[in-house]
Image 1 (cartoon, rainbow, N blue to C red):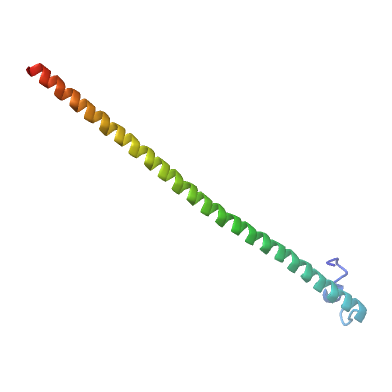
Image 2: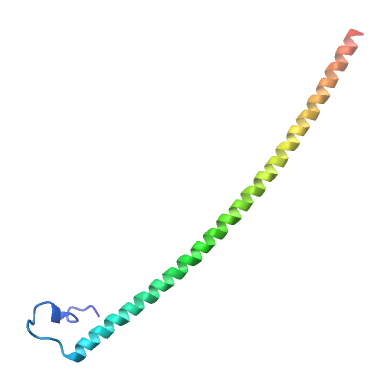
Length: 105
């Protein structure tokens, strides 16, 4: 309880007087209840953070694996393209030689 009266014994309005023991006990009990509630909230937040951290690590690992697979697929595709280009170049060179042979004969 953080109402103005809860801590009035400390604000100087009633100097020289102390709250009744029952009131003091209630104030202390309320403070501990607040601390317990805050600790529970903090525990929940920590658990959520750990869960999110775990999900992020899993996502990073999955993303890295996907990237590796995409790189492998791209490399395989490029190797096929290079192979086709070399084959086509070989055909062109063969055709060029045939043309040279035909033109000289």
